[in-house]
Length: 254
Image (cartoon, rainbow, N blue to C red; front, side, top):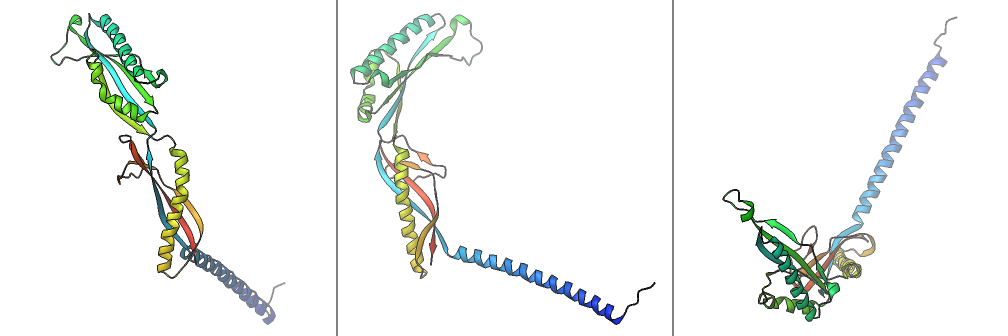
């Protein structure tokens, strides 16, 4: 039995196609509306946020000093035994010099002796003619910054006693840096907000609450220095230092 395309059946087919087309158009309009709404909201949020960088700087005085030193002896192969004996004598002289100047034994770290052969550029040398450098590192770590600094200027007294004494310089540190950084971050945020207010005022807006904030690296600089680094810096050459922290902060504006 064949199906005839009556006017009613034709009308129903057209009606169904129109419904499908209408539903498709409606669905597309909904998607466009949602996308457009999200774009508007994101654009609005972007325009309602102001991001600035703030900083804080504080002067500090080093509370710890590290003095790296060493005693050395240059000896022949046959004189190695006597060289080690002389090294022990030299170290005892250095220890007495330090302790006589109020440096406690707990502040002194003495490393084992190292031995390095002195190379001869003229070719191989017979064993009995070889020479060696004996080195023993001595480190002094103290909270008496001024005392150790003054003592380091008097190493000539050790030289006068026959000690081959080497001073590699003084390193100055501020040990409460972690706590200071926390305190300074609030000052850096306050600086950021002051800058944001100035910028917003120029545009006829007002600064609202803090939205986000992230801290930058810490810079420990010699007093008055501006030589900062993207990776942070820590100057150990000076007793007087400047500590600087930065924050990147975003504020709502209205």
